[in-house]
Amino acid sequence: MGKTPKVFIDGKGGVVGARLYEQLSRRGDLEFLLIDPEKRRDVEERRKLLNEADLAILCLPEETAAQAVELVDNPNTRIIDTSPAHRTTPGWVYGFAELLPGQRQRIRFSKRVSNPGCHASGFLSTVAPLVQMGILPPDYPVSCFSITGYSGGGKDMIAEYEDPNRDPALAAPALYSLGLCHNHLNEMQHIAGLEYPPVFVPVLSDMYSGMATSVTLQNRLLRGAPTAQDICEMLQSYYQDQTLVSVAPFGSQGPRLVSNTMAGTDRLEITVCGREEQTLLTARFDNLGKGVAAAAIQNLNLMLGFPETTGLKVE
Ligand SMILES: NC(=O)C1=CN([C@@H]2O[C@H](COP(=O)(O)OP(=O)(O)OC[C@H]3O[C@@H](n4cnc5c(N)ncnc54)[C@H](OP(=O)(O)O)[C@@H]3O)[C@@H](O)[C@H]2O)C=CC1
Ligand SMILES: CC(=O)N[C@@H](CCC(=O)OP(=O)(O)O)C(=O)O
Figure 1 (cartoon, protein in one colour):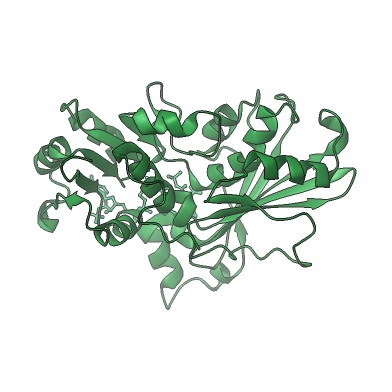
Figure 2 (tube, rainbow, N blue to C red; figure 1 turned 60 degrees about the vertical axis):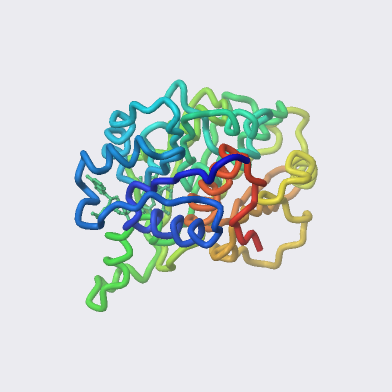
């Protein structure tokens, strides 16, 4: 590689931006463009740094991220957006390298990469391969529920959950997005290749981080009526040789799947449970790991020509 790449993290003071800076600044193979904290919301200062960067990582609310892209007129500035703003936007590549044939190469050569949403990462990790392999019909009425830690809601939600005088009701898991129109539905449907959006119910839990995203299937409605074990083996072969995504051996789990087992790791592990007639697919990962920061670092590595897991702790 030639000169040290210059990286600007826009939104470095937020949960995702801080996590990325902490992990990336240890490496020593990147030069960081740092904004004066007093000017972190100053559009002209951000414009200058965005255009000086070889790679800008946007860790901003959706609207601010969309505006940040408009500030970039340097054709050599490449962008990773962690927000929902560009996940299905034409010209942007979906930043989930393991998901679809050729995706890793598309990320490698793209100037605009959108990181997946965290619930969408878990959903797509199980559903997209089954659609790809022709097992899950694209018109299947898919349903999904997804348990998440509260850091998924950024620093405001962390402050709410960690407030000593918080609402006692926060101790119990809570279903949300009850209008069934969560903002990950679009990417869930379109990246998976489904004809209809899934019914999707996220569940917010009193834990800092960790996710368990589950999909249930009636096997008789799948092509060839596979058993749960058949589906496990198909997913194992789909993800063989991947470092960050893996599938547990069928039947290897205990009587309970604990939702935050993968918190603190950069990996996503799929567990397939069930029997001949019905299947439960669960992806467990850290919303701040493969749900955002690990995925962004993996995408950065691919885009800048570093080995894919440089700077990740994996585990
Ligand atoms: N948390 C998670 O698990 C995941 C988050 N994401 C996405 O990542 C992005 C960042 O999320 P997260 O870090 O959790 O959010 P936070 O709320 O913790 O941080 C948001 C950051 O954006 C900055 N910001 C807000 N408005 C502006 C503005 N007008 N100009 C410049 N900077 C601004 C904030 O700066 P200030 O310090 O001034 O407040 C802060 O640094 C979001 O789009 C989120 O949806 C995606 C997947 C998972
Ligand atoms: C607990 C919580 O609120 N989680 C967020 C998802 C975190 C994420 O993936 O963020 P973006 O899609 O907004 O980038 C949510 O459900 O909207």
